[in-house]
Length: 358
Ligand code: NAD
Ligand code: IPM
Ligand code: MN
Image (tube, rainbow, N blue to C red; front, side, top):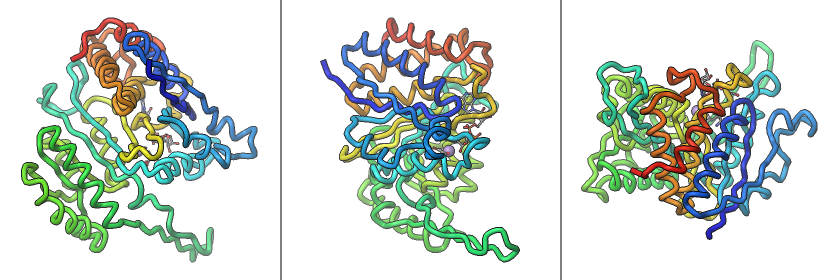
């Protein structure tokens, strides 16, 4: 039987609740499919910081995580206790130091999920945002000067490398080949005249290597509009770090709820552990209420199993989630239901034991 070492990092707010439900579903998948997840829980986050000198994770947390096969994260952030730009540092460090340069954020309209757009049927929307996850707008390059004076100046520089842009585009093209052979790149070269003009150039240089994939580029503002007006147009959408962040929340909402949106932060070379987490955050507005939707986290665990080589288990979990949404009896309020977070976890775990995978 295969064993996998997984660091489980619930984090803050609803991250803790949705991780607990994900573990139930993983245990059900283990029993059914015959593998073992050795879970090591990392208690880090804003509550932990209160007893550890204000640090949200130990200074050597990356060394602690490095030997694991994967990291599963709930969500980070509790802005009432610690400013987000401090409490979220471990997330961005994991992505960058572990060279998880691909962030996959699939969005598929499921039967039973209320699409906020009129006239869209299940199957109409099935796209993946492929977000550049290691550089771009997130390199923390800059500084502030004359802070809290009328003359304050802040500079934040985005860093886009040709290597970084090319590798994410090639990943997107390879993925498109396994899907519907369409790739759209988010640009903004009408205003960002160095960075996005380079993205355009790299697309033009890479696309001829994939003659079977139809590719285009769309300015990100128009792309946001098209996610609402014509989401059926998209298959693989490649975007810079910040553009991909924004587009993936929108994609989640368009298919019914952010509470359904999974993500995988992948180091394709498998030199470092990859990181799996829902797209959503710690949702302080509903934390502690027992109504967070755990399905995004559960689907992120399915992405993790798929990446680890347990494709059958991943398919079983995705089928169980699909069935639960179609059935509609045990869903949280974001999907129009009345169920609690643990009730949804129990329901999906029970389904995992019996469903026929797609
Ligand atoms: P958020 O994603 O936490 O919440 C946005 C809205 O969606 C809220 O109204 C929330 O209640 C709702 N929502 C989110 N997930 C849900 C779920 N599973 N079920 C039902 N409703 C859900 O975004 P925010 O409010 O901008 O950020 C809150 C905190 O989370 C901040 O500290 C932010 O920095 C952090 N954050 C962390 C991550 C992460 O850890 N990956 C991602 C995004 C935001
Ligand atoms: C996400 C989040 C993070 C991001 C924040 C919390 C740093 O919004 O994972 O989508 O911007 O990448
Ligand atoms: Mn985000």
